[in-house]
Image 1: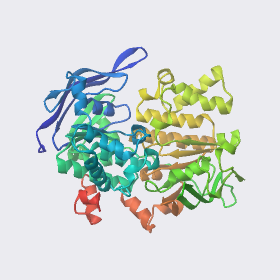
Image 2: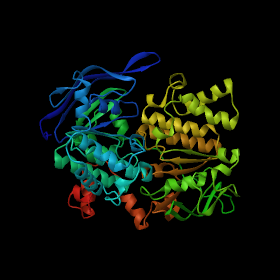
Image 3: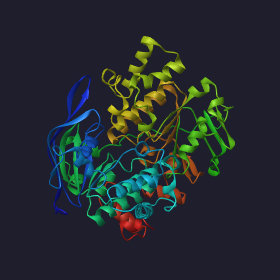
Image 4: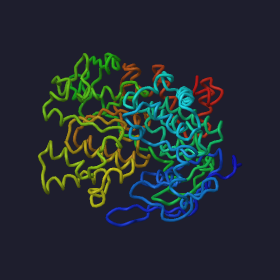
Length: 549
């Protein structure tokens, strides 16, 4: 395959160590990488493979508790492992940018988006503040953010997760860097928004001849973005090839196993009898954030042992409906019933048992887990609070939960969240919810941060728990492959309203509601030409137009 430009980044024999249990141990074992200007390299592999660690090392950076212990990282002729930290910092944000997996954990909640966007170009004297603000608005528009001339003046908590991720992508592009490390940039995005963001990223890379490292566990996404794919496993390089060759003819067994994931399809349960009482009933619920109405006449039921998947684009009201059920956001009208009994609108007025029965697993594990509290204590708190467990009984219960989520208690009990990968942190969130022994669990994008191999294991675990404990699930997701795997019923939401709902086998067969059809047609496929073909079918001549029309 013809290279797009001269060599920009050359990594040879990269070794990285992490500190745990009072000793250093190696987590990246002699990885090589060569990246040309204008070229996109996809890094894939399961959680803990070293993808993000290697991506950060490309900036000459190692996160807390890690160190680059060997090898060379040369960026545009400058050796980053030996140059001063001052020189490395001059590169970061200006010539090398990083788009983190969790935008919610990366933005400063005390400052408006546009103020954070303009900081780097002003600091590096690339643009004056007003010029940088105009550029921010242009990038917001290219990334299909709503009200692009106004959204930057909001605080991070005032926009949805998908909107925040796009704002972070715009911020990374603010200095027009030579290299951008994209660390799962579309993880939090619904499929329709993902199309727009992928198209905009491709356009920026092509237009400015920017090189990129694209870290992801979504093979269909990396197929659209990467010129070259490198597969990693536990800090080792498995194989590397151009995207077309890698998709058509992977050489190694591990790579072939990645290509074969998502085989899990849980058998759909028969619909409950009409006389059967739901565990949770949402009846004609309206909700608002201040003067802004965000839910309108939302109704659906969740029965024992059943999974209701709630899907829709970013900002459609999926998570807001969950907040109403849990009492975190009292509805302005309508009712929420649990086992036939109306729940108080606010969680502050609910009994301890009512609180225990409904638990929530949050989308952003980075912000849901206290970084200064050990994993054992995080999982143990609800077991102690709701179950009254103490001492040996509590420790045994924590160990049991860690085993259930496939984390070794002897290794993870005493660790802190920053010492875990994104997938490991999300599994801790799952264990914390299970610790209360609930009847109903709201799963808010619980597999979005997990690689596909681990996600499949989590879906199987949730399915087994549901069968064993007769649990009811509300499964919020933008991943329609997950819906096909685990759902019994599907609720489709758009702009705060339910536009369609019914059994999964009916919902995935035409005819569909036009919005449901849009969601289904936006699911990426393992074909490098899929995105370009889709844009052409939708009447978009180029990827830049996809992000601006």
